[in-house]
Length: 285
Image (cartoon, rainbow, N blue to C red; front, side):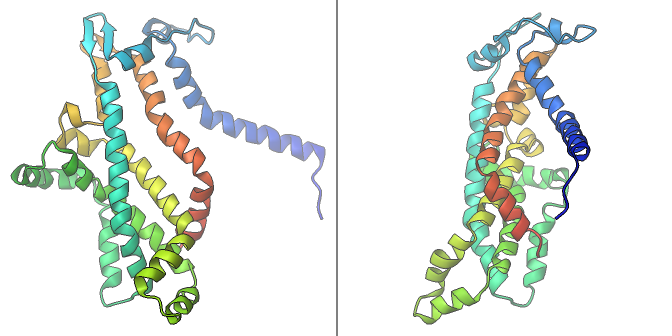
C-alpha cells in the first residue's frame, strides 16, 4: 500500500484550499455586500473592514426600499412565497406524473417508447423564448394567464423531463427479478410498484426532485412573461431593485442570500440522496 509523503499532503491541502477559495469567494463577497450600504459597496478601493448594517434585510422584510428618489414599496417576501409555492407544487405534480411514467418506460418496452421519451426530454433542449409566444396566446384563450395553475403547468417543461429521465435510469439499474418474485407471490403490478420499486428507487427520486426544485426555483423567463407582479417569484422580483435613482446593490445582495438559502439548505440536507441518485441512476438511458 502506497503512502503519501508529508510534502505531497501539504501540496494537496494547499491545492484543495485554493479551489475552495476560488469557488466560495463570490458567495462570501455577496454575503458581505448584504451587510453594506451602497456607498461602502461602491467605494474604491473596496473595503474589507466595514461597519455592518441590517438595513438591507430590514428593507426586504418590511417591503420599504429607501433610495434617493424616496421610499419605494417592494414585495420581496411575497415573491419569495411565490417561489416556494411554484417550485414545490411544480415538483409535486412532476413527481406524481413523472415517476409512474419513468417506471413504465423502464419496465414496459413498446414500439415508439424511446421516441416518446426522447421527445419529452427534448423539451429541455428548446429555449424558453421558442414557446413563450404560443404559450402566451393559449393561456389568454384558456384563462390561465397570470394564474398559479398556469405557471405550475408551464413549469412542467422544466421539471417533468428531468424527473422522467433520471428516475427512468434508476429504475433500469434495479434488478427486475425482485419485482417478478413479488408478482409471482400473487401481488398486482400497482402493489409491486408501490411496495418494491418505489422504496428501492427512493434515492433517485429524491435526487431528481431536488434538481427539479432548483431548476424551477431559478427560472426567470416564464414567470416574467406569463405572470404579473403579484405572482412572480424572486428571480423576477429582484428587478425592483433597479430603480431610476440607481441600482441598490446592498438590497440585491441581501435578496440573493435569502433566495438561495432554501435551496442551499435543501441541497445540504439531501446531499447523500443527490450523490447516490445521480451516480447510480443518471448514467443510463
